[in-house]
Length: 199
Image 1 (cartoon, rainbow, N blue to C red):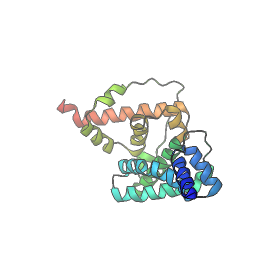
Image 2: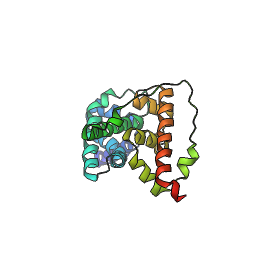
Image 3: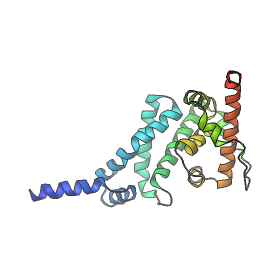
């Protein structure tokens, strides 16, 4: 009876572990229970992001499994410099972008001619993006390239900071500001060509 009580207390304690504590316990013990905590917290979020980028449920399911496997195999490499969720989303976005690049050989995605500016003026208002109707937003996001789509989702759907996005993309913060600025400009241009006559 005492063993059962201890096991129940131990299990309830594990459920309250932070991501970092679960990682440390998994690395120390190799007990799959600790990775299951992380799996349960993140797999549905990863699937949602994969579905948004890959636009196919089966591909998104396969990608989610591949990403979770990649996370498991690289867990010891997580340095803790950023939040674990940022690290997970970095792997997710990069996996999906690579998947699309390999599948489509989209030359517009492969171009990375960002000229880095020390201070970028944001000419497209965030208010414009936030006030667009959901149906129109979905249509425009499908029309722009995956790099622009990913960076806009990171900034406006995930609410990531410029610093977090810079860490994910392995770019400077000024380069990320320029990427966001250009992605917003392309978004607005695409929006105008699709909906200008309707407004």
